[in-house]
Image (cartoon, rainbow, N blue to C red; front, top):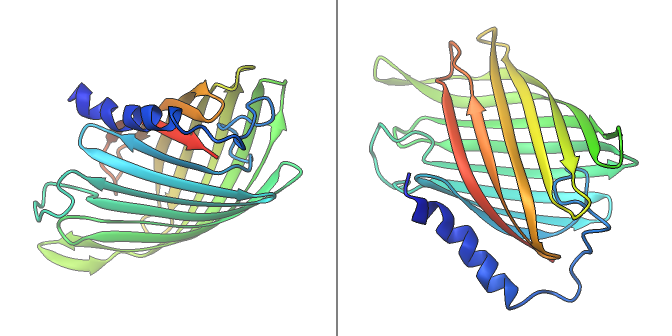
Length: 238
């Protein structure tokens, strides 16, 4: 892994943001940015070994809107060995007294012209075990629409999907956070569970800047290959 490429983008965001810290930024005593039910606005970027992710969130009280867009370094190539060349996620979230409801559209476009798009609705609830330990059981359900290659031919690959999970978080008093998000996605058409897990954390450099990491893992199944990706993140809050 090229460590310079991995760190360059988030570090550039940190350096640029230090020179323009907003006077209206949220106080870290009021919100922890690792809390998935917290309403705030942020602009960020993540860098992996050969991929980049851009993310934006806008919080308006109980309503939260998120957009993510990711791409491989060779996202425009036609190399059939490059999987998941481009991907996206758009999400609307409504939170009331720790109970959240969401609608999500997510998808990817691969270099070999296969693709996957899915629409989910979901819910989660916030349990505060202590001031620092938070648990968020969650459940999403929806339908995926995609194409796969079989004997060189593109064929449809559609299915209903159910995905239970648990987001467990430790919120440090200084605003930093660590979290683990194990989940499993059930593909109804394939009658197969796909195990997944996300581990990450963030460190507040200032009241409006954080750097962190995210490790995504997908387990092997009849319909997925085992895959692990590490990304370094940088975010500016306003």
